[in-house]
Length: 18
Image 1: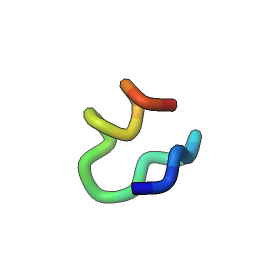
Image 2 (image 1 turned 135 degrees about the horizontal axis):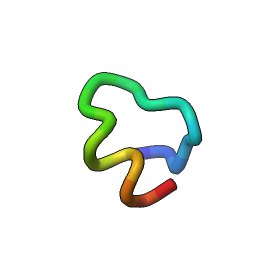
Image 3 (image 1 turned 90 degrees about the vertical axis):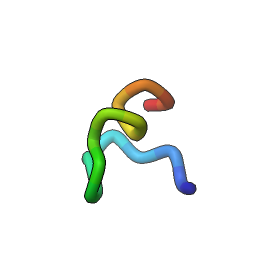
């Protein structure tokens, strides 16, 4: 899981990590 600003797939988790 790469910490990216762009939300890929489930943005919910990605957004949290940011």
